[in-house]
Amino acid sequence: MRVLLVGAGGVGTAITRIAARRDFLTHMVVADYDLARAEAAVAALEGHGDRFSALRLDASDEDAVRRALVEEECDALLNATDPRFVMPLFGAARAAGTHYLDMAMSLSTPHATHPYEQCGVKLGDAQFEQATAWERSGRLALVGMGVEPGLSDVFARYAADELFDEIAEIGVRDGANLVVEGYDFAPSFSIWTTIEECLNPPVIWEKDRGWFTTAPFSEPEVFDFPEGIGPVECVNVEHEEVLLMPRWIDARRVTFKYGLGDDFIAKLKTLHELGLDATGKVTVPSENGPVDVSPRDVVAACLPDPATLGDRMTGKTCAGTWVKGTKDGSPREVYLYHVVDNEWSMREYGSQAVVWQTAVNPVIALELVARGSWSAAGVLGPEALPPRPFLDLLDEYGSPWGLREES
Image (cartoon, rainbow, N blue to C red; front, side, top):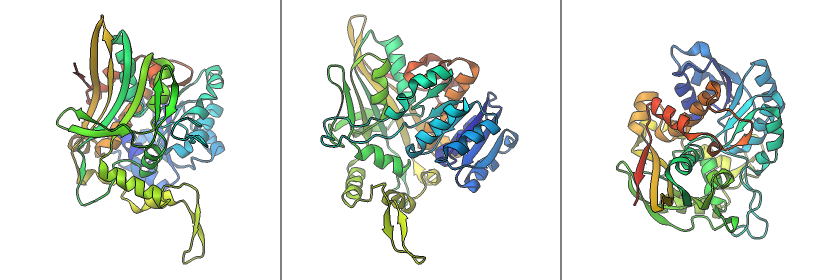
């Protein structure tokens, strides 16, 4: 399989390090707006350089991306950029006749008058509008194929297929005990994406109501995470799983809650109150005259690159799916989870835990597509495909998953 990887940041670089160890990959073109960053990702792959090449590419230029896919004879485009670039990359892959994978879906827009009650434009709506065209093309657009969304959705499908007869609720729960030495505030993932998902109205699904929204950081609960992480307070956050799971899994309720902590939430609220979460550009003075900048991009530029924090980071991160329902007439409650220890991911791959945990899942998905184990056409979430091949391959990649009975 020949793959065009767009984005050579923390997750993109981790993808190259994971993919380099797998023989399904014939060649990967690592593309980034910053050519030096793409070249650095390739140069770090000692002994594997012949299967990887670097390319400068603007992810917002749909036609340029389409040409790269055709000229490089790629079978698939793997999107490792932030959600702003989903639609041009999505369109380029369809125009080029290749498969497409991303880890975050097209952006939402809050409801104009009732943002904390009703959905406006939902995550992924722009992509699902093209589902028929993708199905007719015979190509697969696999959306939300990171860890959350992604592995969490695979867990939900596995639970529906093998662990439950009826599902009352699916709740994705994410928590960590990661500490970054030397920083008071150093998010372990893209601050641009973190602001987007945490300050937008969270979406909840209920079978008798459909999708609806609530206020950011609502419904706090303490969830006890496995493997020594322990209790973490989690709150509602906008996330793709809630928009994906009900399309293919029969459940009465679906939620996503993230363990943020009071300090992190307070900082996000302050950014919002100051207007520093805004993506629209403002004019600021400079020594070369007025320039237009996005406040959110300034915030990102002022914070450390999450990919560089691994040496200062300790602890574990956990992604998982809590499911409640019945099996053989009896109540059942389980938590399916995946834990990555930062010490292990740094030692084995040189990538910090959060970006590595995100990166491993699209590589596994690409391998399943290359093998033919995942064969489908259209715009699909991970829960639309067989879960067992994915979970077996996750074990083979050396990062096993777990199941905890809750009752």
